[in-house]
Length: 491
Length: 75
Image (tube, rainbow over all chains, first blue to last red; front, side, top):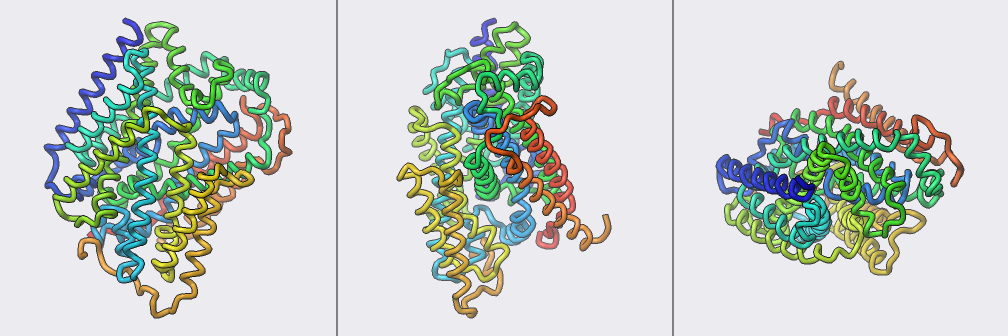
């Protein structure tokens, strides 16, 4: 059986599995409320929570964008292992304080926190809308990156039988179908299956790379011969960029709305604690492995173009599949694992987008079944728009990630600072977010990505923090909130 | 591990060490463009970074197991 035929069959089986899971999830629902649809009635245990956090955090970006970036930049991309780990480290500043408040307030969306923390202040509503808009923009960008990655993988796994555009549109439709029917339950259960597939696939791929390339040392020597700069100690700008990327990803990723919603959706504090402890090791089993995959591609595919480098992993798998029937079958497993990872991230993003647009941007009541329906329709509209953009990807996957993070990081004061500093006010927070976003967006519009290796988004965050702290520090003490204002369910 | 206060102190210490490992993971200590030696098949500065991240992952997992998340009284 040819690689393409095997790929079409495996893809078909996988899609049937996804649809079946969504049907089981639909039957398991308790009611039609947003908490049931968007948070699985807050019943995710350690195992499913771990795998859904894993499959959500490790996406098409990790599986296609990161090997592509390792291929382009060389060994300095080892920074990716550090910044993915930094997410689980920075969660220490968010989860222990936010989780109890979220449970008491029956939060559904990140905007519920803003309402709760700054309730009663005149700038609360504009702040909630600005934070909601930043999160929706970041998520739409994230969705776009997933759709691009999905199209590449579907094209490669079917041996070219499925055109890129059909892969993007067709798989987007499948995600929309199972997410709309099964909600967070379908997303978390499919994430769990997808997480296992991805782990198995990557470990098998690593074993093949080590066996085929003569080991790590031989691969490093080949890279040093072909591209010495990929192996030598990075320069100061690259080292500053390394530090900046850890700050950018570590701070921004914990504010992924879909990650925050999983903190809300955990069955208990114990489940969450255990899931996050185990998540600490995932960068070593995933990011480090995909970085090595990208590096191993340097001797195999010299001189790929900038956008083309995002197809490094599919190309490696294609080459592997030509080595015999066993290798072909394993390459298909990895391909489906990669596709699973991408789709699992896209479905989580879509679910969060629906709830954010309905509750935070349009102010729909958080407890009403109508809100669930409105959220589903809004998600479908965004998915359609993102699919259109994905047909002609304008940037590399990594640049799409950076842009998303540079927006998301401007929400840091409203969450991390607001949790730890009672004096922070909504007006200061709003002014800071506007200034920070203007700097990050201005840099992008002017074509300035970084200054001295430091991302414009990180520079924007520094300005954002200065404005938010200065504004709040000098406000009259009578305006300082005495504590949480009111719960989300009480509004 | 002992009482809540001891756990909290140990957790903070672990988070501090993780911060130090992050600083050490970036090759500030080497000259730009220097030719590396191979350690375990990797350029030396890459091997140091990987060792730092492995250490940080272990310490972070322990720190999470020591973390108090009060909530049961809320449900």
